[in-house]
Length: 264
Ligand SMILES: NC(=O)c1ccc[n+]([C@@H]2O[C@H](COP(=O)([O-])OP(=O)(O)OC[C@H]3O[C@@H](n4cnc5c(N)ncnc54)[C@H](OP(=O)(O)O)[C@@H]3O)[C@@H](O)[C@H]2O)c1
Image (tube, rainbow, N blue to C red; front, top):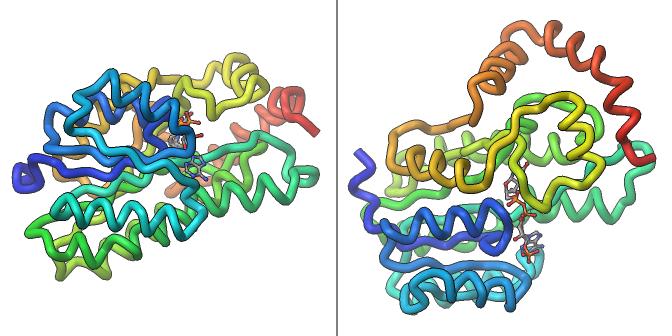
């Protein structure tokens, strides 16, 4: 079914991050070109050198700035259009909500939720010119299961999931599909030392970015609207929907361990 999207001509945000770099490497064999977006020029250049530089285009910029969204749109148009937007950039701040800084709260809302919305809005007119195109939003298991220490992050990812579903339905009579891919904990710099220590103590299942990227490609080339990674995590997501009292009690039982690791 999704053969129709290939070869991919893709915009990938957060490309120099842990999952982003792994996605770029895994996606390139099926791509005509990739536009990689990030704030760190040197990290983007290093990544381009490891790939096929002729098929890699770079946009250096902060996704909270309109100029960055304009630069992405201009380059994509110059290249003759594109058929895949991966909203992958994100930030996290494992912290007690009560004492979390306003800057951290705003930054998570801006990069995890507002930026994918505004970038999608900016690029939809271009994508509509393609016979088939798709937007894939990178969410998180935490978008479906609220977890202490991640209140705002969970809120942004739940918002992203709701946005994905609504936009998919709004664009159902166009050439654009909108999908949601939710990794579980993954070994990248987004997780603080405190979050990693808590995950170890709670024996939280964890993936490498390379494993996430392989699952992502299978998802991309398949027909599912949404996917959560991890069998145990997928089961908890389902349980949280149908019998929320059970995960509520289980997480309450983990609260002393979570509090021990929470920065205050
Ligand atoms: N790792 C996990 O445990 C995990 C689990 C579930 C979901 N996820 C999701 O997976 C995605 C990728 O995360 P990751 O684990 O790869 O984290 P990461 O290594 O920290 O990468 C995040 C990327 O987002 C970019 N970014 C952040 N703020 C930005 C901004 N204002 N403008 C432009 N780029 C910005 C960063 O760009 P710079 O290079 O410029 O800093 C970085 O490349 C995120 O959406 C995250 O929520 C991660």
